[in-house]
Image (cartoon, rainbow, N blue to C red; front, top):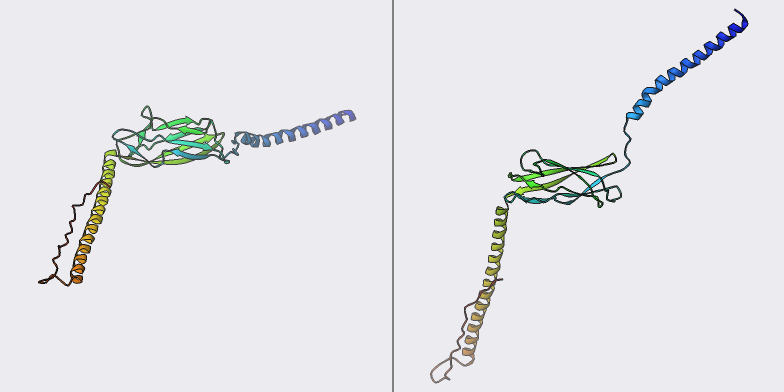
Length: 227
């Protein structure tokens, strides 16, 4: 083997060694690159859900009428977010309700004011408290909230309110009667004192004394009107 051939083989082996090193480095870097591509990017946006209407509402299960939940989605600076996806989820059993199509869940997009309305909510026939779970998502960011409502018989609630109003009216009339009777009693006592004082000043009504006309005090019947 000549000197030229020996130099050629040495150069070729050096190139093969460099190529092998490059291939190994590429194989080691490939899983890390694949993991970096698969990992989702974390959103820098923060969402907040503000309950606008529906919290603490009492639904009439006889008339199947409910207060429609309304929420507003905002960012960390309290600016409304349009186009966010909002999901309203009702309980699957017990006191609850349904959305159009007898569905327990409805998905709504927020408007330009960042608001989403769960339209068509109707309560079921089970009385009690229940919670509507709300989830909002936008550009990888999410937030959640709970809206508490109650299913009740509106007739019973109205009867209770009527009884309370009647009791208040009765209490007002009784107070007015007591005031009038107190005024009448005070007038009667004052009249008696006045008559006794007049008799003492005139020396009594004896024989030969001056004839006095007795003083009469008449107290009319008190009239009680509506308070």
